[in-house]
Image 1 (cartoon, rainbow, N blue to C red):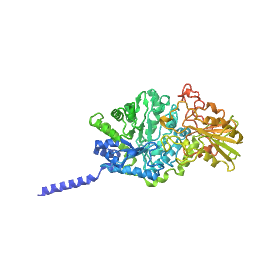
Image 2 (image 1 turned 90 degrees about the vertical axis):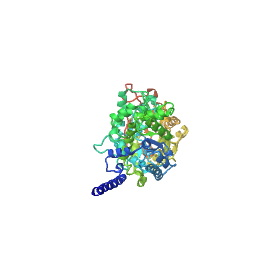
Image 3 (image 1 turned 30 degrees about the vertical axis):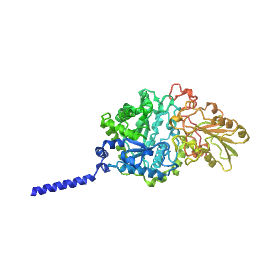
Image 4 (image 1 turned 60 degrees about the horizontal axis):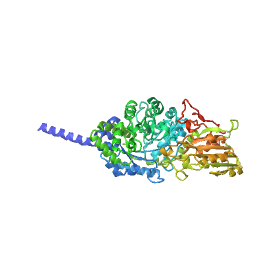
Length: 624
């Protein structure tokens, strides 16, 4: 009897222990080591749950039901994809939380990760601070400023409940005809490398000894994304998504270096490029994605496709979708930005795994990496938005930082018809001054593409900020009369008796392929405004553009010339330098060509004959 009683007791104890352990899931215990948590969760997952983690869908489709039914691992907002026009931070949080509830309602409760293009501040969101685009930030030569911009951007992104930003773009733009050139810090890989500090601003500084591992320092930071891997800025004639023809040495010395710095800084994700390298699509390039990035560089985060990126492996896109799935996932892409036809993606990938076309080891590698980032970010412990952060969106300290970035990004290329008679800084006290040009009083134009909508917009009613005209008016002496005329005729200029004129012209907003441009002329009526104003009044021309434009016909007529790039929402930074509250300090991070026939032409080329060389920029002293 004794031994039977003992056996019953042992069985009872065993059953109780089993019941207890049913509640204890290692992956849910933050005290467990990272590797233990990932392996524990991965071991519990079905194929459907794994493939769900690899799927990123557009916000429009991401109902709570879809999230739970398909175990969706990630959601994104494409350019301009918002919960409602002019949505508040709280409205964004509520939308993201609703999707998260759907993800957490699944058997294993794996949180989803929401991603958005916050490429110059939280640019999709109404009233967010819009920082200068990267082309301007490269001219600051100030990595610590760029890090502070990352910190501010992280807070504004988290203010809307979002933990993942598709930034920075670390393209090395070698040809300004490319429509994404303004997303590149410089034509010089060393400048681009130095600006990877943005990653440390977005994610936080990697703890000593953990360099090279994905890192996100808590709920006020966001996961970053180095993009677009690799060679996106080197395509033939700057044609977007085209072919980068370069030998391996060129690829490694020009386009790859910033990825080394990004990985050391603990970047969580890398996005593959639409472009090809010597005819091979990057989204299907196993050597560069798996052998080089993952195995040689030891990148431990996850690789994400671009928007419908695998579809574009074929020409025309989507013509053989199952091949695209096989080629993209097979190359080593871990998360696929579908964004719409996600059931087709899930069905195709499921079929391929079940039929041994794609090995289970490839799926497990992808999911391991995605889970690593989610655990590292603390998403399992804090899956929901933090309502206390809503006040971070567009706050004054961030606008002050953007204003500082604007004035440091301005490059003064001409100051006076001769060096002995500089025009700048302009006097604040004057009888009457003229402000002219299409870009002087238009917030949308000074922000450029990737602002509120994908392509950007014109006008002053799309978001909050300060136009250059209003900045000028608030900077000059109250007794100075400011006359604004977008396109004044010569007679009006002649008879106006102006002390001086500020002419602000430039490009319309554009993004990606829509910005590809083979002639790079200043759009009309910019040239005629320059000519009619500058021939009779002392003038400074301020150019708002995503790249250098053809200047030679007009530069002689100008007394002074400022490249202001795409300054964003804080136009006051332009007035700060024009009127001498601060000096000009920016240096060209791009070569300013004489004519498009010279392109591509980059610093160090044998036949280097620029209008203004890389690194050029006149300086002025601030008025004491």
